[in-house]
Image (tube, rainbow, N blue to C red):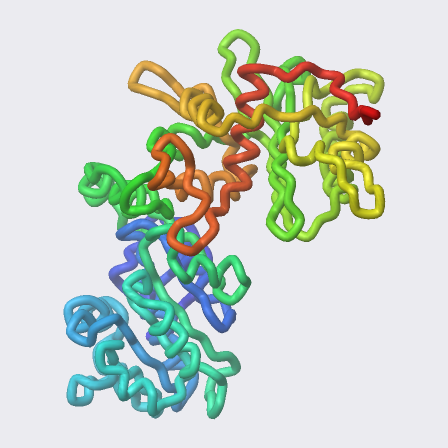
Length: 441
């Protein structure tokens, strides 16, 4: 039976029978034509089956297509990819296993089985699609070798693709750097994408502890050891957005960057409970200081219009920024970045910059327990870069009370957490508003 790819609800779907219907990230995978794409998520989200289904669909649709199923070692394919392919993916008679080396289709398509421990068969062939199972097992050399096998020379399909699946791993993993550079597209799978998921099947994953629970149940990119914010739990700290009343106290914090991203966050505090809600993120690189201020004021203007707050009133109590933004710039006698912000309508004050005490304030805001909800909550989908990078922060091996600037030789992406630190310290110890630049002498 031909593959049917369609949207639908999860109700009354039995994915163990055909036709196969992908959902969420699995559906995105079928529609994706990026040269390099990885579907990433916690365990048991249907990632491997989605990749194999796409491979089978391509082999069926494009006569003579050359595909490959690859893993770090050839022996590991037998008990994983082959079992899934033969039991759930390939209908009886649709292909034939030839000498345990490849699956052959009646239309001339082939799916080669290969391990990177013996890459000879890969090096001698050009492929339309290469599927890498458990890509977190690979080295950068392994992945780059595979990119040379999907160049498009002699391709049968209208596009070529190196696709992989993986569980989240150490934030310094090389594929995350390729993602940041724009070379590899990532799709985020969740347990909601797997219609066979039940509470009984989730129970063993929920029972995991430490980094394994965060990777395999929560789907977070965290280091195996030394996570800096163990209090963070998206099931507790992330909430659905709601309209924030005009009388809640609002303030913002900004961590400056140009070549690296600048990070800006807006928060509001609920009177009485003192709950802090993070409801806006601006995160971008390559923006000049004046452009950054314009982005911020545009968002504030939108809020005013939504809340029908007049320009004359002060919607925001405070704006704080990275203290380095107040440094005088000697080149061409330029004003400080903070002065540019102020000229653009963001009256910036210097944030407190004691890192260790600042991290303690962040931890206190994240702290929670069975009878104690956290003070800090993040609006779902509104601060994606904070959600992505906060669990990836690790301890400095030379100073356990501080956050590491690097993991190995890779600079940590700490812009969002720095801005969060400025934001929460400003709430705990507000700076004296009205600081002015003066020139002495």
